[in-house]
Length: 128
Image (cartoon, rainbow, N blue to C red):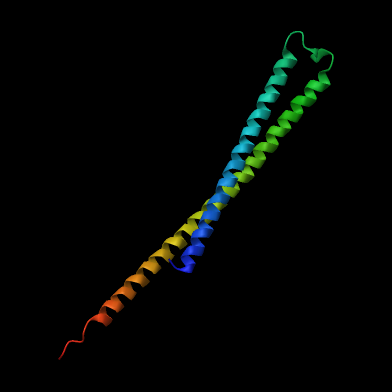
């Protein structure tokens, strides 16, 4: 392989790792949003439960519900941002992948031409 193909292959590997990083971060934010939503639901259930201290400390329950809901919204927003980054990284991976393919084909053509030239140079000249 040529130096260009080697460099492009390394860039492709790096771009794929970057894409995986963004996918992982997106999944992490989505999971955190799910956990925050579940926490808000649990606090609401505890607030409505018989014998809870919600009548004594309603502001604490409301604050926890508001905080969990805000956290959920923030994680969903972060997941959306990471989703956009995944899309950009996917486009980069595709572009670099196409460049690698073109470079490999050029390397193959060059090697075939070199082999043909060497084969023709080894053949004795035909008398006329």
